[in-house]
Structure formats: structure tokens, C-alpha cells
View 1 (tube, rainbow, N blue to C red):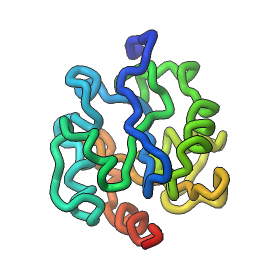
View 2 (cartoon, one colour):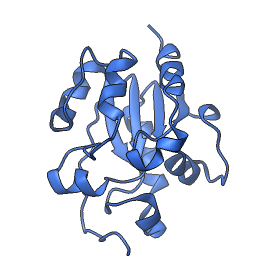
View 3 (cartoon, rainbow, N blue to C red):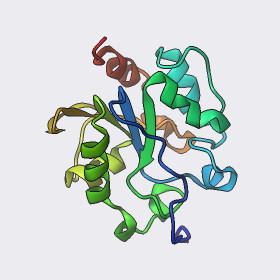
View 4 (cartoon, rainbow, N blue to C red):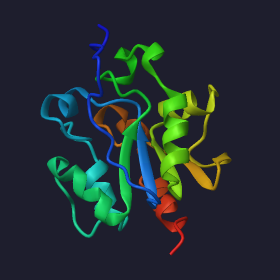
Length: 170
């Protein structure tokens, strides 16, 4: 079953210029689309991990996603017009060109891909490893994280999130 295609963004970007990290996922998950909040799926470790690695002072609830800007963090997806699991997405709706222009406009220190799929789409490679990538967009470093989704738990390693945090300029 394909994810429903929508005429507009499922979730609006949460961005401002010169962020420390712009997190980029594949697309809004089903639960996130239902309630209108990023990383809202049951069992998703995104919010707990942000606190655990010191990017937020405490664990935020998905509904507080807009407050990430005050911590120098932002949110977007490679596919803005669909929702669902990666296997349900119509890849023709992926928009790496939109993401590149968004990175160029907002100039974050790091773009952290939340899962391998959005990095593969953006970089145009079938294979990507976790961690810092050799490519940059202007001065923006690119980093791949394991997905915090419950469905991707077999690939979960928080150490990559700690590595991302250590790479930030202070």
C-alpha cells in the first residue's frame, strides 16, 4: 500500500538560518502525520536521544517540536508531500533539489540525515555508511545517523548520535 500523496507539505519545516544541526528524515511517519508533529511514532527514540546526547536539556514531547529552534536545531524531510514508512513512499516525490536549496539558504553547521534512506536519495548513492560523509554543501557537513524509529531498532546505535554531538563547533 502506497503512502497517500498530498498536495502540500505533510509537516512544515522548522528552520532558521545558521542552525547547529538540521535533521532530515525520509518523510513524516504515519503517526506524525496524524497528529502533526515530528517523530511522534510510538517507540521512536528521537526525542529521548536528543536529551541523552545533550542536544536538549530535557526530553521534549513531539508536540514541542517547534521549540527545537531555541537549541539551534531544525527539522525537515527529503519527501515533504507523503507520509508513512520508507517502503510505502513513492520515490518520485523525493526532492533532493529542494533539500539542497534549503541547505544553501539556511546554512546549518551540519545536516544530520535521520536514517540512511534520505542520505542515499540526497547523495545519489545506493550505499552510505553512518557518520560523517566526505561531501559537503558549501560549509555544511553531512552526517548519517541510524533511524530512531521502532521499525529500525535492529540498526540502532546511540554512539553515532554522540559522535554527531562531538562534531559540533562550540
